Amino acid sequence: MDFTSQELVRLRVAASVDPLWETALSLHLLQNQAAPLTFGPWRREVGAALRRAGLLPAAHDLMRLCPDGAYFPDFLTPGRGDADLDTGLDLLLATPRHRLLAELTRLHAHTRGRVPHGMRQLAEGCPQALRRLGASLRAYYRVAVEPYLPAMRAVAARDRALRAEAALAHGAEGMLTGYDDLPGWACAQGRLCAPYPVDRALLLRGRALTLVPAFFCVRAPLVLVNESLPPVLVHPLAPAPGWLERGRGTAAAPLAQLVGSSRADLLRLLDRPLTTGDIAAALRLAPSTASRHTSVLRDAGLLLSQRQGMRVLHRRTRLGDALLDGAPG
View 1 (cartoon, rainbow, N blue to C red):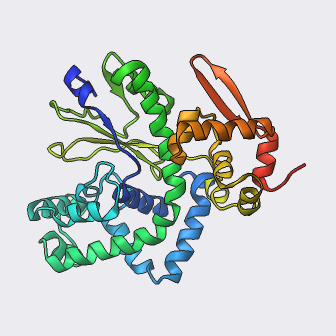
View 2: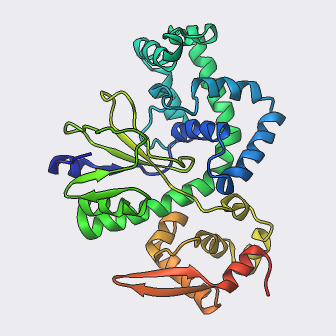
View 3: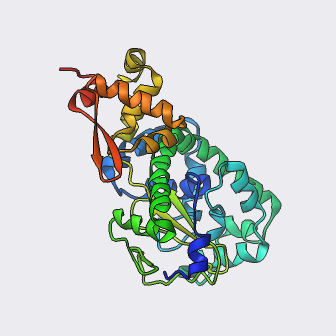
């Protein structure tokens, strides 16, 4: 992907995870065994929750519409980091009829484009079929995605803070170079290369590219197939294994009673070193407040602060790990 100077100036990073992209990618994770250490506990928990809610048939229908394969319809992911589900669903339900037909025909290219009977009304743009799809997506989202938003948004906020820091220090091209921290990504001289599953050049033609961080994206970045749509590049956030357990660990309440809820949240964030600015952005604190919390935790021996160049990075100590795990000593 090559950037002109105009395209670099228009580059943007989504504010947080996108509800419908996360919904689609979570459906993929339920169909495969990718990243078992990271997402195995989530799969088991969500599978049980879907069963209890009577949503397994609806989830299976959504999986047929959004298979874990080389292609799934672009109309399922209309957002570019939209903050709420309603916005995304409004865009999805407004998909033109010709796009519904074209994308569902492409989805079933292996059957010579014969759309199955159960999807024909949707392919024809039937309002009732669209409303049923919207209701199914909303019900699935409430079980499989929404309960995990705090953890997802915290990881996305850390990533966004890193990108913002790189952009402030080195400009838009410097921000792109910062994506070298993702496996297989490289940026040099206005060209961004990413490990896409097939050879493909994303042509911006002067349009603004939106980089969308995705919690449930684990294999490779994604782009929309239809090049006439506003361009997005969805990339993995790569949460650390154990994120689910840490997010609601048994030590959480006692730890919050001991050090306060904000400082407990701060300790949970430090799965990797972060700056004070990263912490402030992730926890939505004033930088001065984040600095005060890090100072208290450092004096207590729960984190270390080390200068690297122009940055000061905070990391948990072994004592902080033990306290967070509920196993002091």
